[in-house]
Every structure is written in structure tokens, then in C-alpha cells.
Image (cartoon, rainbow, N blue to C red; front, side, top):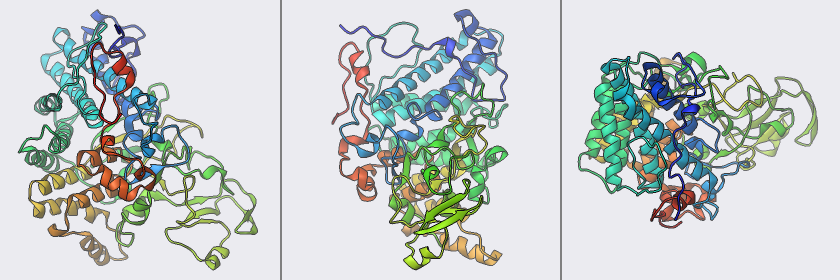
Length: 551
């Protein structure tokens, strides 16, 4: 008989500094049950729930769900040359119940859920805080728990559902029906909406509009599941409209400004963000998204690794569809504002380039990734490396700039200080558009898409030219389809950790991967719309815990 711990129990000695770097914290090495019943102990447990977000979504790829489980293996990103998790793009036999990364993600999610369950279960016994404060903190944590279950049900389907604190060894588990999981998620988010303030006392705490945004996303996902309800799309549209209309959020005028590091990260478009800090002691794993989307520039002539250009893990390469089809390069500014295609010399010297000896000084152009094929004559006229689309490969490809972190202290630093912009208003507009389209209101849906597209239009030489570009970016209702919505989500949210789930929840994963990701197309099958249940979970469960079909 198997007698192992079903889910890793909450270790109170592992309470980390919270993602909320504005909060004052007293990090302790030992936390007793009695301490958890005090005001300070309870607040520390709440902060630990926030801290778990960083492990789940910001940490190194062997732990963080975003981006490894959500970026490549899709239509927009395929694998670069490096990394140990290419099976998630290859969809080959190495993607199986013993894949370490899948096991880590499962375990980390349940550890984090038990942290949340502890806060929720202990709240009634806490002294020294008013019921109003306790309710708000519980609502924050229920929001976090809801999102963890949302991730589990999207990635794995039916999973074990536990809403109370685990304090001892458990060896039994069952895969709860999809309906029950969605019911629990929705109940948590409805409580959060009813309880949370519209604006946070400390920036980074969960708010009512963040919970409304999350619930809109949940209804969109449930609408295509076996638990779907007739009013899911209507509810999603109502919630998204509330976030857009009832608060002070506003799209920035310039798409490129959304991801400016520092104070720019706290802008009017951010509905909710997971915070990080430059304090290396408090930052924990930090935000490591800066590592994965960078081409291998540092072994090319005239270049060496530096802080400004980033540490190139070269994990994720844009597909040809992303680079050559997805964007209207004449009108859409998001193509040039999303990708870095020029690198300037930071290693002066004399090199052989294009068959001739070239001496480069610091700041000279060292390499240029073109968006069209150049003739031999054009290439011969320049003194830098030219990588045309046909030459680009798993090592050399346009770098996504959204997550670059030139404010790291060291050239090889992995933890970054950027906030992870988890929900932003542009996505809320696209939530509304999708919900309205799928409920039969294409005309209204197009108005929400067009808000996002007008903002994305290139600035012209004159105001009149800018206005003409904005109008040219607009679409009519008869141009709108689910595929168009998915394309627009790709253009706006490229690399932001939603893509695999978007394709899976809309039933488009196989179709679009086969069409746009040749590396993945060869092996992807119907069962890949879910990830495998970790074998370790099955082995340590007393009785049957069924594997997902196909694994």
C-alpha cells in the first residue's frame, strides 16, 4: 500500500518576502500555530500567499508555469536552440507523466493552494484585527487560490479539489468533476468581487476590478468546457465591460510605453501586477521572463554578453507566422515595438564579415535582422552581419523586448526586478470582444477590438496621417471571427503567458499549431490539449488516480 504525502504540506518556515514590496514584513524562520492566530502572523501568512505567485509565475523555467507551459508549443512561438523542455514544443514521447517540469508545476500549485487554504481556514481564530480587515485579506487570498485552480483545470482537466488546510499526511485523492472545480473558482472570485476595494491600500494588492477581470476570463474558459452554461459569454462580457467602464483604467496612447521599466510599469493600463523589487534579499526568485526570448547574440562578431542586451537563454523563437504573417507592418506599430532586430557593437575589434575585414568600434551596428530578403549587392555594401529571414534560425531570431531588464545588477543575474503585468486593460477589451462575438453580437464586439487596434496604429508624419492609419486599422463586424480574435490577442499579448491556454480553451490548439508551427505539427495529437498528470501523483495516491488519455 502506498503511504506517501499526497501533496506537499505548507512549510511555515518558508514564508518569503511578499511580492508586495511596499508591505512591511517580519520574516521569521519558525512560525508556530499560535503565531498564526495573531494579527502579525496572519498578515505574514497572507503575504506568503502573494509570494507564492512569484514561484508559480515569475521563477526560473524549471518551476515557473509562465512562460514554459504557456508560450512555446503554440502558433506564435517555437523552440530556440537551448533549454531542457523542448518536448513541450516537440509534443514527442519525452512529454510524459515523468517530465520533471510538469511534476514541479503540479506540486508548486498545490503547495501554493495549501498556503491559501491555511490563511482562509485560520482567519476566524485570528485576534487583533477587525472582521473587515480579515475579510479583505481572505478575499485577496481567495482570488489567488481561484487563479491557481484556473491554471490547474486549464492545464490538466479534472484535478483534486481541496479547499481546507492540509495539516497531516493524506494518501487519498480524487479527480473532481470539471463543474465542481469551476464552481469553486467562481465562488472564490464572487466573494473577492463583493469584498475587495476598488483601489488597493498598497499597490499590488488584489482589487475588485482585478477579480472581475479574472472572473470574465474564467467564464470565457468555462463556456467551451463540459461545464458550460448558457449565460457564460454574457457574464464574461458584463464583467469585462465593468472593468473598462467603472474604474479609472485607461489604455496608454503608445503601446511601446506599456512595458517601460520602472515607474512606467505602474501605469493606467495595469489592472493588476505581480510585483518585484531591486532589493535582492526581498525579491526571491524575481521575474526571470527577461531570460527566455533573447537570441544568442553574444557569440557573434562585435558582440559579447552585457546587461543592456540581456542574458540570452534563447529558449523561445518566434514562428514564421508571428514574424511574417501576423502583423501588418505598414500600419501596426506593435511589430517594431515588440521586437529588437539591431544589435550594436560592444566588443570592438576587427572581424571578417561578408567576406571582408571590418573594424568595428563601440556603438557601430554589429548585426541586423532584416524583415525581408536582401540581395547580395545590398549585403556587400554594409559592414555588419545581415541575417535575412531565410538565414534566421534557432540561435538568431528577433528578440521580444517586453521583458528585457537592463536594470539588473550583474550580467549573469537571473532574478529580475520587473513587475509581471498580469492583467492589463487591452486584454480586457479583447475579453469583451470575444464574449460578445461568441454570444452573437459581432457589431459590438468589433468596437472593442477597434479600440485596441486604433491604439496600435503607427504614428504618421502629421495628425491627419495618424488618424488615417487609425481608421485603416479598424475592422468591420463581418471581418471578425474567433481566429481574428486569437490573432489580435497574439499581436497584443505576444509572450505574456496566455497563448497555449487561449488555443486549448477555444479548441484551436491542434488546428493552429499544425498550420503555423512546423516543428510541433509533426507530433501534436488530440490528447495534447491537456498535460499529463505527474506519475509521482498517481504513485503516491491510495487507490486510483486516473491519467489523462493518451499518456
